[in-house]
Length: 219
Length: 218
Image (tube, rainbow over the protein chains, first blue to last red):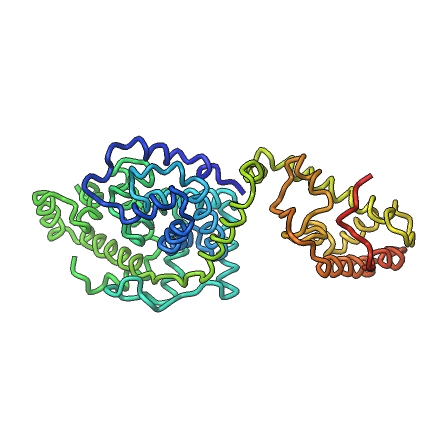
């Protein structure tokens, strides 16, 4: 299992070079990060508690398998601990967390290979490992049915990784364009283009559900 | 014109356009049914994505991470670095060769260091290969006679070869696990169909006062 992108993450150095990437924005994790970097182990535990959910969620949406996602989430959080000294607080800590998680998930995906990754997803689906929930992520959104959840998750897995990552970070994690650009280290224009291409590809793959949903919706 | 409009439909949905551009797209959508239909489908796609529920969170994730952090923290930096390097691809071949070497050494060396002498030690490796062809034994060999938290008898050899695989040399040796695994080897050998399987299996009956942790390859 390799985590070379995580272990030698160029993103960390890149973030350190950025001049004031969040002017006027206070990082809500700043105090905990300071305490952790000063040697307070309990501060790291508090950071883990705060970020474990988005880390697991991103890993799950990127890999499609709960088992793999749990493993990758652990590795990503552990990588934070190993490389925390390289984080110089010149970007949001959450950006750093997303970056490390995305790299860990992409590396795992590469290690697994596309066909094996798909086998894992199908095996979990067959053995009831997939856990469709009726609880909407955002109370303002209507939860979609279990079958639609499965199809959306499968359609996501069929996207190229760079498109999948962009659309997951934007439409599922709710990150703004600018932060996604920093996580992916690409210009904002590239982020927008990837999101649009990903949505179009998903629209084609989810046509049966999309047509139902779009009926009666005003343009 | 249509392609240009369609390329901006996500920006339109996200209200990421100047008022002039927005107005231009709206004028086009009023007159163009296919583009308007594509916008509706795109909006429905986004709605599906945003309607994905919060997945059930693994309850022990944080605890597992903190337990691993505590374990890593107790290891010297040099050992941590070695463990990380052992997981890198360029060490994979050495890792595989090292593990294979250890498992060849263990069966050849083990019986001769014991007092029962029930079977010729030289035949054991061959019989284990034979049993492996019937399934079961390969996975046992892959996992080894030792659990993840138990010290390997040849841990120092493994460490020199860069073959540390997550074992914790300081962990307490688990006698009951060792005995259970020995019984499993015996069971697999009995079912292997080898002419000397019974004699070989009896060789693996766990006995008191046999300390496998002290075995060394010859």
